[in-house]
Image 1 (tube, rainbow, N blue to C red):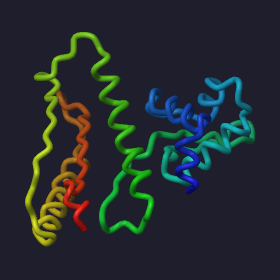
Image 2 (image 1 turned 30 degrees about the vertical axis):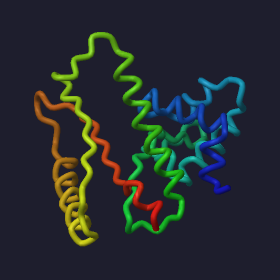
Image 3 (image 1 turned 90 degrees about the horizontal axis):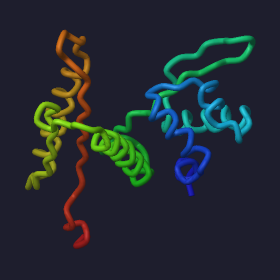
Length: 174
């Protein structure tokens, strides 16, 4: 079992992840205050391990009364075929867990307006050879990068877009 799998299965790490996800960003002090049954040192160790394993990302570091107080956010998970990792399953599950949490929070609101919110879900089956698929991925990356660096303008708001690619069941035949 990898370190990442151990962390994702650990109840303390999972509670930390829930706190940070709910708060959007959280300092180690805030996390420790919300977990009074766990020692501050343990919270700090878990946050560091989670950051080292790309579950959390460090947003800032401040020195307060001689202690370093880090502010964390849940890491955005990006997996692509050109990354050197064998931990795709764990990363994919983390990606799906993050998306699931956001949708749960959205659908638990009162008076949601899916048309106004521009909610859509699509899962097209694309029959592409590897060359064409790579071209599609490169074009999507370019397009998403172009839009992700735009400055906010009046009337704009952050929109979450989740893209995930997987083969159909034809992999069973290989």
